[in-house]
Length: 548
Image 1: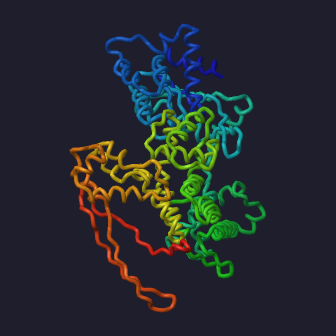
Image 2: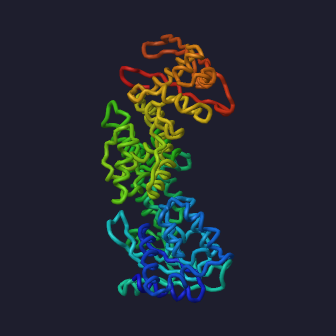
Image 3: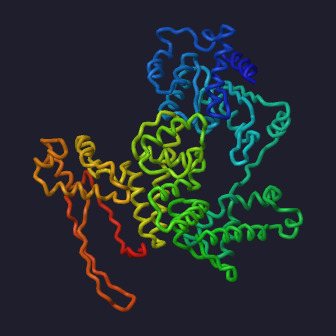
């Protein structure tokens, strides 16, 4: 397959055309570019076809310095051969640099994955799809590349802004060739995958108040694209000929789907479904899942795992969050395990309860590395870390709301401080003065932080910082090893948000108490650090039973 690919690429380069080679794995981009370079070098065509003659006006010269400075050694190596690689595991700056180089003609061949086929216009006259076997993790085997992806990739050849024509080549096996020829000459309708996400969308409608019973849910479903395609292609959605004959509008099939989704949501405590009346009522879990876009499978996982632990530790709750269905796309790659193990040993203050070979274990390690601001070297791990960081705060806030509404005071507090740690990238057992790291010297935090502070007593670091106000400025400077900055340190300590709570309790009946609570701020306000407002959570807690 590499030989065939090289023949097509070299023929296009002889006609002064740029080429995009699409492969189906991140690793495949580098191996394909390397295979093309080796064959070009064997035939003595690497300099003439791929690199070209360098001159003073050569467009490659303005990118040489940027390519050499890139941390991605593969990008630098392939640039020297007149080629580039592009996939989702690269840093965004490296991907943008590769796109600019190809757009300006600094590189003539670009080996990439299908992600480049969506939404980016590049001046490629020739497009090659190398192979049609795509690994499907859900099925654990290779499947045929979707014909819609094939058409989308072919559409990259000869874009109207850059060219008047284009060439597209599909390299596949003899067995698959007949299937693709048949699909290419016939129009392929776009089918709906709405059934897989029906429960989540139905929960959102129940929370929004647009659906209150099964009949309203059926009418809602009949307005979707799923119903349109079920009527056009019923066999693809499990509707037999006899069922279609007796129910041409497929209202019965819609009722089956809605009822199944309602039972699933009821089982996972996201809605209350009355089978006799058909009424649907929203629950706290369903409302939180809708507001934070949490999948119903994640809610089921949270309910099961939190229910097993009466007094969960920080390690337990961090593991529960990383088991969310939102992180199932995190794949464990063999070449990453050594670095993940190194990160786990060096930068993870909280114990990981799952092995790094599982997605939850890898997610846990990368999340702690993100909060600890650890350096990650692998580009695929950097990409995974960014994905985890963009979703972890939302999932942690959702878990906090679920625990709070369920009355679990201890777990709610721990999830809240975990969410805040993700937002600010500061652990709760680190000094709160780290929020002013641009104003204070680093040895201030080192002097105030005690690495032996247990996470259960994490807020002692706040008390330790507040205690600096009871000292003289020179004593503060001596303690923090900043002898001239005692007053400055105390100034920033006064910026730490604190309130004084005064509470009086009056019994009304045997089971009812009236609380009169007064909150007084005891910190200095700064619009620069506090913004427009500072939020506080206030709840009444039964310490004996751990209930709010």
